Every structure is written in C-alpha cells, then in structure tokens.
Image 1 (cartoon, helix red, strand yellow):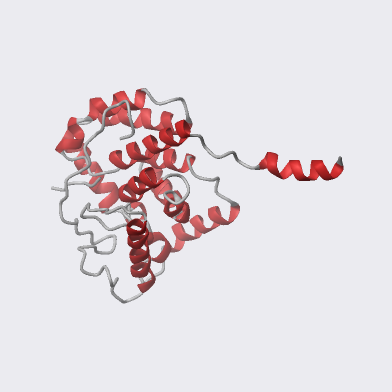
Image 2 (image 1 turned 60 degrees about the vertical axis):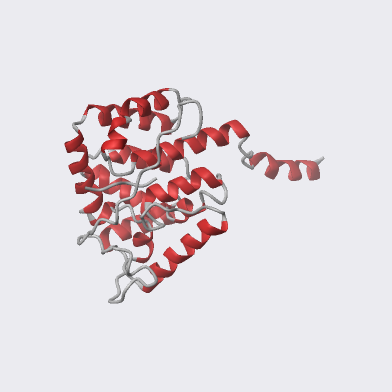
Length: 253
C-alpha cells in the first residue's frame, strides 16, 4: 500500500494536459494579445468594437480581466493619442522594447544567433512569419505561440520570461495600460521563481550586456538598439477573425 501511495502522489501533482477547448481558448487569448500589442494603425483601431466583443465573450480568468480593462481604455482613446502613446512606451524606452532577445543578450553577437535560432524554429514548425518584423518582436512570438500550441509554441515565451517581467514593470512605472496586456500574458506562463525575480531586478539595475559589434545575421534588418529606434518596413496586420473562433504585424507611420 505504501508503495502504491508513493507512485500515486507524484502523478497527482502533475498538471493535466489541457483539453481541446482549453487549448483553443488559450490560443485565442494569445492571438488577442498579439493583435493588441501591435502598432495601433488605422486598420486596428477600426476594429476596436469587434475586439471588445471578442474579449467580452471570453471565459472568466485573470488574463480575460486584464484584456477587458485594456480594451475599455483602448476604445475610448483618440487614434492619434494611441499612436503617440505606443511610440513613446515601446519605441523610445529602453526597458519596454518589445524585442525580447535584447533583454537576454543585449547588443551582442549572441543576440544575432538567438534571432537566427528563433527564425529557424518558426520555419521548422512550417510557419513563415512574413511580417516585416524581427522574429523576437513580441506580437510575432505571440502569433507563433497561438498557432503552434502550448508546448513548442510557447517555449520562446517561457525562455524570455525575465524580459517580459521587466517590460511589465517598466510599463507599470509609467502607468501605461499596456502593462495589463503583459500581465495577462505572464498569468498564462509558469510562476516566476526566486532566481527569475532576482535576475529581473539585476537586469533593471544594470541593463542587458553590451558589445561593440553588429547583430549579424540580422544587422541589415533596419533594427537599431533601443534609444535610437528606427521603425522596420511597414507590413499589413493580420485581419481580425470572427468572434466565434480563434483570431500580425504593424504598419507604422
């Protein structure tokens, strides 16, 4: 009997695999986050009412609550105010850039290899992120996570958990409603450990590593280090899907 209990206890502590409905809802949340974290161009702002309807229909969860709060603010803002706020918090602030590999590798050669590895991950999964953005741009990473599923698809998000925490803190410090979107994403990931929180505090104090080299093989993509941001080439965003089913890139001015 004691041997049987020994075998049962670990199994009881394991997290059950999500069913098809839970996986679909998780994918929808990730697609919504991908859309809402894109640059608020005319096409995206024109769909604000439809986005609100989709969010309102979400099952209750901490992520759904954060999304509901954000879309309420998003719907009430003039389009010009949304555009300027987005540029201010994501393009001009070092600690809230949406390029995830920057937080792990800074401006070093390792970052170039990390970008290449991420692009290869997308291709190996049969996905072509033809968005005009670097593969580590958070809306792109979220789109891949939604399409590829919780395990392989969300692996890049889990790998960059510390960067996501820093982005959330930075957005909260300036009281940006976008902090709620990042908080919603973090609520979908495994809880941060003490080592993660310590690393985030160190990263916030010291910044990512730096190196006086280029970012080959991505040095010609139009990316510049945070603080000297140059927007990438425009690309058409993903159109909003119907509210009944699961729902990619921004067009900058």
